[in-house]
Length: 322
Ligand SMILES: NC(=O)c1ccc[n+]([C@@H]2O[C@H](COP(=O)([O-])OP(=O)(O)OC[C@H]3O[C@@H](n4cnc5c(N)ncnc54)[C@H](O)[C@@H]3O)[C@@H](O)[C@H]2O)c1
Image (spheres, rainbow, N blue to C red):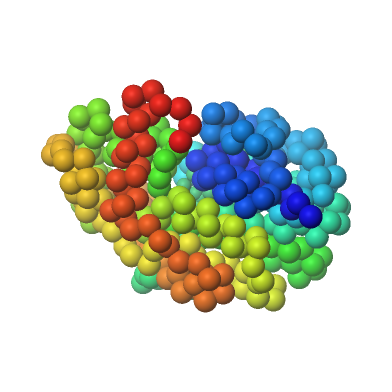
């Protein structure tokens, strides 16, 4: 029987790759996206797009009546600085919007499994020494990260009390084709765009801060395994949470160097003051995803950066969806 998937945020960067992978794995796929940061051009042709907000009654009705096997929830307000400026707006989308969907899953009673896209960067905070393990204490430093962790707690609660099937995937810094270079996230996308425009690269702080850069294709695979695999019993909040990264911390300076090598350029690097609240070291232990989901990253940073640069260059030349 054909399996049915609903992807919120499927017109976005990661969501569109997830939708592509679901479709190629035989899922009949629908998308809810209000196109606030996503693009219609990212939506796969085989997917049906509902251009609505996750906060709407219409979205709740689609989730409740759609008989979906899986709901992959990526739609979010994901700008950390916006969340600091307006925590109410952040929570309205990221917490209240998610609850709108979870209540609808519960009301539908179809056993839909919910895969939630959380963050492995911001929830662990700076008190731990990376690599961060799922069970480490969490001290989120921004309303955005608090909203992600709050949803993980809600999922855990819905799992224990209402038997809702769920999994939380805590992504590192995801990069790859279709990432918007104009947003707050995505240093790789920003650097690619500036290298191609022959502009200087700006690094905040000393550039030695590390991040776990993970290729979007690997992330989409982790999501697919999260919705198709057997999962551990839904107990404490971390039981159904999986870090999705590479296990490697790469500094921003190193990242700039790798990209310049890949493109054969030598752009000027401009150092700006460190941004408040920015973590110094952040990378993930990914052993649990390997043990339980059978997932591990397959695309090396060098290879992923080359693919991303090639895509960015093609975009500048006016190529379409890739
Ligand atoms: N990019 C990363 O490095 C990263 C890291 C950790 C977690 N995440 C999470 O992954 C998810 C996807 O991120 P992305 O990088 O693809 O961002 P994105 O901005 O490309 O995708 C988000 C999508 O959600 C849609 N959206 C936003 N608010 C909506 C609403 N109220 N109703 C319906 N649609 C709405 C947007 O239009 C967009 O298409 C987010 O939940 C984000 O928090 C991303």
